[in-house]
Image (cartoon, rainbow, N blue to C red):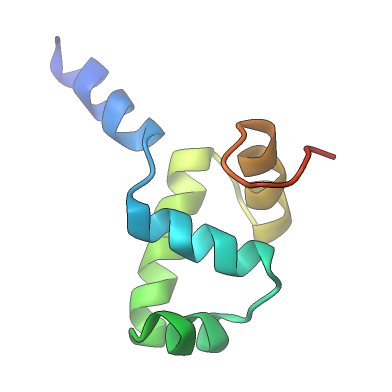
Length: 79
């Protein structure tokens, strides 16, 4: 597998923690509330959100949640 293929593969897969952050966002939690729920700093949550956006190809929360639902990453139907 070439370097580009490995990079794409890594970008496509969400880590367990990224999935937790995604579920918090889907639940309507703010970044500070997500940080409290996951017992991490808000800065750490921002890093996870940035990675989520990159991996999903999203530019904002609504788009990230829609794309995640389309890819069956959330337990709700795609809109």
